[in-house]
Image 1 (spheres, rainbow, N blue to C red):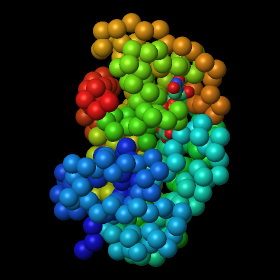
Image 2: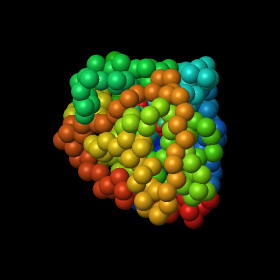
Image 3: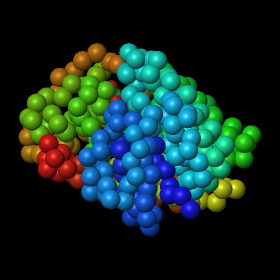
Image 4: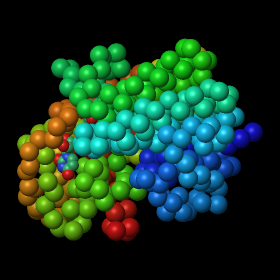
Length: 314
Ligand code: UD2
């Protein structure tokens, strides 16, 4: 029996999925990563149980033999970021759409057991109603959102046309240890944490009243494992919200962080970002029902754990 495969397994979320697999009893995990935004150091403490292949999902021939026969494939490799997909649309398109097609094709042709796909809450766009439920019409506002939605559609079609078991999880603004704050495209919480520890004001795009369903990475990783164990006849071809179910504004988030740290720093405000969704909150009822989703970390607990990680690792 081959080992489970995690594409993007050296990245922020992927490396947490690798750990969740090892904690759940996997002997070894195969990681595919081109190390564009992932790092070997993200796997350093589990390196003796990981087979890391430096491979790009845009190159079908290099990834197909690694995916063939895998009992489970967790497809997390992607070029994330809404603004990056606007400033660099070609690489994000080829990675997120062509790369996802390659992973699904390699899994189907290679007889892999099933694929869990990392979709994005950005697919919803601005809905009139919150929380967002899976049956709402998607209204992507950015190339990234459209690309991630296309991946979901492909995952579903690979289930219906090629008999591959697939499940898509729409991640909602995941945060936690190992999120890389070094790029302007980094997730907002990693940037906020770095500013906080360096006692600098963060830049908030817009008025800061936009809200997010921030979800702790360990909860998301555990949900990925649950999705991979759920009965295929229930979950195959489906998409589920992988959020925490709450919602907090950026202004409030910065205020909580300052309170935890015992400082008072006024943010700087900049122009709103193109493609930005105003409010995001996922209804988790369907994921709870079909996948046994049970987030364990409150927003504040997650913030505290993450802040401690940045303090220890910066
Ligand atoms: C989207 C998806 C998320 C995930 C992610 C991957 C939504 C609602 N969420 O996250 O699920 O797929 O893409 O990249 O679409 N911001 C600032 N200052 C900064 C950086 C960001 O104010 O220095 C704002 C930004 O304008 C946005 C919020 O913070 O309103 C979150 O931004 P982000 O880049 O962390 O994530 P987002 O929401 O684009």
